[in-house]
Length: 294
Image 1 (cartoon, helix red, strand yellow):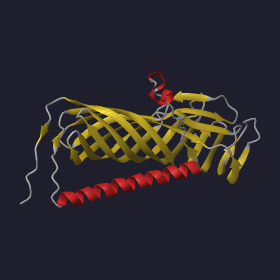
Image 2 (image 1 turned 90 degrees about the vertical axis):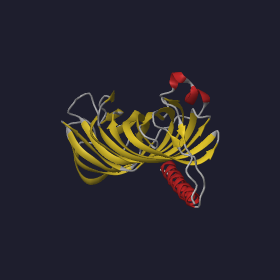
Image 3 (image 1 turned 60 degrees about the vertical axis):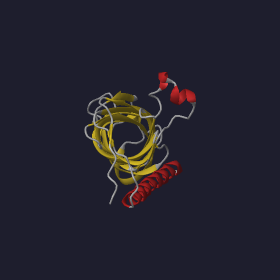
């Protein structure tokens, strides 16, 4: 729980810093700071990087032939890979850490349409005590019974529930780029965006000592917003830090090999992302200076 709260504080700090940075630079611009705008139309970019995540609590409902119950306010954490050059920069294991991959195309000087994947990992915390309502029948376990807002401990013999390969958010968004500083070879941009997509998690579940299930499945949808700082250098390369938050709703999560066994949940997610990438000029770059104010 402590780690989750710390990540939320870090993300809120990042968002506040980006907002302050934007307002400050906007104030300088109004006072006559000269910025050379870039016509990005026709530019294509691609990036790769990593995310650190936090999640709100969620109510998870499990339905099957022998059970129908809901667990309230279930907490979950991310599962980042320990940082090392081998874990994060070896191409053969590139998809194992929590990663972000995205391609974007500028259809006008400021706006780009993008598509990509946010590969997050979501793990329900073991040994937490939550409320349970509903029924479990003929499971052959000690958990058979009828529940009405009773307390239960999420132990390994009762439930293991995680989207660890992963909580795959395949999404598209519209992003706006505004140049803040032009330092010749280095340019600093503010990036904002709104998007939506689908969730294709590979959910690793063991429920009531049934056989473990671990397969990809189209489970729901999400919407999101983001704000970031982009630093480009030598025209073709950039790195970018982002704060991204959104809402995920998954009404159709597979939990066992039987199609009648399903779970559903919805929650908020929070990402802090660090990515690096390259830009390909599909048409010649045009730069024009704004006329100075009289």
